[in-house]
Amino acid sequence: MAVEQVKGLNGLEKVLLKDSTGCSAEVYLYGGHVTSWKNDKGEELLFLSNKALFEPPKAIRGGIPICFPQFSNLGPLVAHGFARNRIWSIDTDPQIAPTPNSSGSFVDLILKPSDEDSKIWPHSFEYRLRVEVGPGGILTLTSRIRNTNSDGKSFQFTFAYHTYFSISDISEVRVEGLETLDYLDNLQERRRFTEQGDAITFEGELDRIYLEAPRKIAILDHEKNRTFVVIKDGLPDAVVWNPWDKKARAMSDFGDEEYKHMVCVEAGAIEEAVTLKPSEEWTGRLQLSLLPNTHVGGSLDLPNAL
Image (cartoon, rainbow, N blue to C red; front, side, top):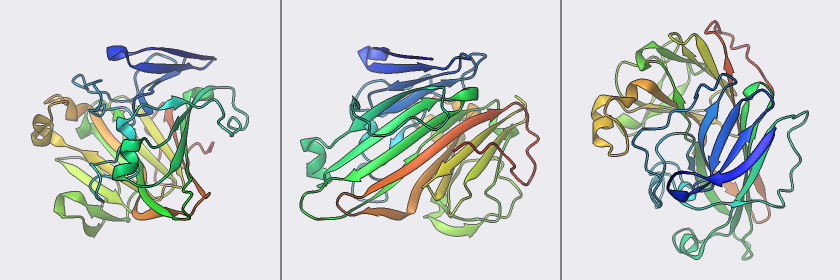
């Protein structure tokens, strides 16, 4: 196991994590942003745009951006909040033990509001993030957000791990585990629909918030014959997004054809905002793993390590 702090692109600080089998991840202090997750063969499992800008205050396109304290435009702040546009610190007093039975490597980061943040979102908080690469290359992100207001006031927030997965071809991918659920369609003014398919497949732009989603979701990549497994705790919703060709061409930090090789499946707390009273703490955990086949089946009998 190894944890190393080095300079990344444009001199930004990043932390490299590696487990005993060679699986790895990298985390930029800018945004508390996981930009890489590789298996023991050195294959990149996250999508990062070739046009991604590592130039604050621009958010990094790809990897796992953190949406806090606001998801999308569901509130008065800039889209997806400000956590992904801030420089985080190494947390020297994380106040949390390693994941049980863990033999992996991890880093603890912390974000507190700046004076600028307090002007646009007048609340005091501590956001602690642990990123861990565990046995078998399992990537775990644990977020703990505490209300540290001294004025006795509660606050509310929405949240998402905006995870970009690297895939062979969007037309060869299906997402299982969200069938029969209600969803809000972001392409139709967030009108509510019910998922009719036995899996989600892609034939054009798709941007949906699935409500009360199950704890486990699978992303089957038939061409690469592998399955991503998403396990989430404290995060009731799931977003599925692919911008397709027209929107891809409209994004300056995204290649025109890159939509074919990525899909976002995001664990979040979106429809109902989280409310924290003073001194209360919320935890939202995301675990990502990889299975070397796509024979998952309808029961989603998947690894359950959280």
